[in-house]
Structure formats: C-alpha cells, structure tokens
Length: 481
Image (cartoon, rainbow, N blue to C red; front, top):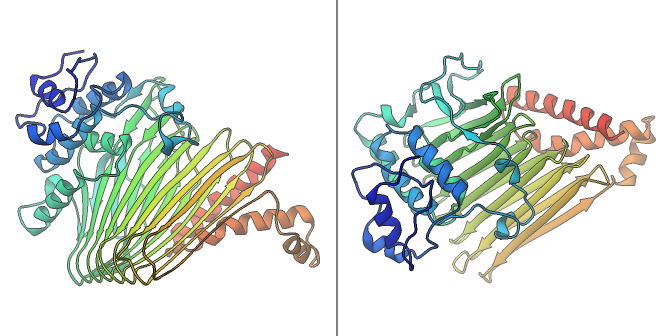
C-alpha cells in the first residue's frame, strides 16, 4: 500500500499535541488544496492516529472517488481529517454504542462497488419523480426538481447545494459512519423545491438497491441525498432501502440531509427492508426553520445490523416536528438501533415522538431518544413515547428515553413501556368474539406495528410494507415455536 502524501501528514501533525507517528496503512489525499488550515488543525487536538481498520477503509474510499465534484471538497476534507483521530467504536469505549454490538462490520473484508454505474434496470416506481441508486451508485433520476450535484448548472440551485454541503463540514454531532459517507460519496443527489412550489401529492421516490459481491467480502456503499425545501414549499419524500432478490452480504452507509425553510413542509417516509445478512448504518440530519413542518415515518424490518442516527434541530419559533418509528428485530441476533436527537432552541416549538419495537427470537432492540428543550424554547410542547414488545424469553431490549428541559415554561411528557405479553383485556375482548388466544395474539402483534406503518401517506408503499411485515411476523412465530 502506498505511503501518505506530505500534505496529509502535515495536516495531521498540526492537529496533534504529540509528534505524529504514521501507521501503515493510512489515508491518502491527493487534492492540490490543503486539507485544513494550520490554525484550525491546531485547534482540534486529538490522538495521533485512529486504528488501522478506520484508516484502511478511509484509504479505500479515497481511491474509489478519484474524480468527484469540487463542491464536495470542504465536506470531504473535514471528514478526512476527522477520520485521522477517530477510533472504531466499541461497547466499552463509546457510550453511544454501549448496547449496540457492531463487530459484525469487522467480520469480513470490506470491498467497494465499481466506479462505473452498473448496467441494471431501475425498479419500477408508481411515481413520476424517482431516483435509483444501485450499491450507492446513481443509475437514474427523473423529476423536475431532481438532479445529481455534478449535473447542476451554475445558478441559484447549485450555489444553494454547495453552501449546504459546506455547512455540513461543521456538523458537530457526526460520527465515524457520517465521515465514511462524506469521504466515500461518489456524488450527491439534490432534491430542490423552489419557493412556494407544492409537491405534496407528487412524491419523490428514492430507491436504494443493494447486492453482495459474492467473493466473501462485504461490499460498502455510501449514497448521499440533499433535500432543500425553500420558503413555503411542500415536498414528500419516499426513501426505500432493499436488497436484491438473492440477498447478499453488504454494508449500506447512506446519509440524508434535509433543510426545511420558513413555512415549508417535508413529509418523509423511510422504509428499510435490507437482506438479513446486511449491515445498515444511516444518518438523517434535518434543519427546520421558522414555522416549518417535518413529518417522519420510519419502518425498519430488515438487516442483521441496523443503526439509524436521526438528528433534528429546530432553528426558529413555532416549528413542528412529528416522528413515528417502528423496528422489528426477529432474526438470529438481529440488532435494530435508533439513536435520535431533537434540539429545540426557540419559543413555541412542538414535537411528538412515537417509537415502537418488537423483538422476538434472539432479536435485540435499542432506543436512545434525546429531546433537549433549551433555555429560550419557552412555551414548548414536546412529547415522547416508546413501547417495546418482547415475544421471546431470549429477546433483548434497551431503551433510554431522555428529555432534558432547561426552559421553565413548557409542556413536556415522556413515557416508556416494555412488556412480554399483551393486555389480557385485549385478549379477552377478542376471545369473547370467538377468536382463539393464539390468533388474538397474532392480531395484536400485527396491530402493534401497523399503528406506525399505517401512517405512511402513500398507499402503494404502505400496502407493500404491511405485507412484508406480516410475512416476517408469521415466519418469526414459526421459528419461536
């Protein structure tokens, strides 16, 4: 493996309090511009280097995107520097991963998809505006307000996207996987809805399909999407992640960034139905401005390892955030993890979060939901509720609802419930109508998840997701018997 460039070593050395000892292999960056200014580098004292695995993956990602849009350079450079001082998170070393075992990502060699767009036909979509990624590579995009970053002509939209991506370089709550995506994203799909334009009834359908490479390695992909809803605009986003019919072992590491401007509205439906041999580490980052609305529905029922980091910040008064999520962990040692963070900084903000999780077999579920109501967020109305259902004595759930209130004029509620059985009154109600206890329990299990799935506002996606969930529920019941 080749040695690091002098520019990289200089930048890394400036960021360390001790002399740098370069380990091999290390990340190489061959950009003519400096990675970061000396003043900025010296301000971020950190360990000399991260571990070898982080550096090896980073170098592979760098090599795979030799040619990319210069608009990505600020983001890519900031994340590259961050990776030099980031160690692989473990349950002992990182509190955010205390209950989430991600050792599966280290169990196989990491490979990357071809730089060329694969010659595959995109899946059929019932919607006019649609986008398809295959193993992280953009294969098709269709829609009046949809474009790849590299294809944007000079003008307002291009400048808006460039500013948003440059601002992402300073995202303080990022982690290793966010940085991997920033370094490895080949391009960015931009969904830009102009001021006053409504696309609420014409959703943008974003499909991500994945496949294993079949050579004993785990193929890693890093698709990235930027959504900008300008003042008074409305847009609906349908985000689907799924494996090919033959399944396969792969690692999906997507990032979705959403900017909701004043009086704008974004309705976001996210469905994750990956192969059960796959790993799925995802970031969703949302910025909401004054009087904006963001409605989010998540259904995650696939992947062996699923980690979703959901970060939302209200940047103006009278802002509304609605979050509904459902996770189903049923396969052998399957892990579903949702880490959410909602920050309210302005008066009269509203938020409501509902989280539901079913764990059966040896499934593992994690929920860490943080809502922070800061000092100036007076007259806030925030609620959080998590309910978990354990269908097996070997299933495991760890929940950590966290409501931090600094303001003193607020209405905030939160609650958590974990149960290993259904309400006996509900079972009795169904039995009184001639339904046997087993069928009654199956119906209640289905209704538990359907409560969230039914909130997907588009019937074709809702029906398909309900059918998949029903089939998985039946399969898990057979395995438990």
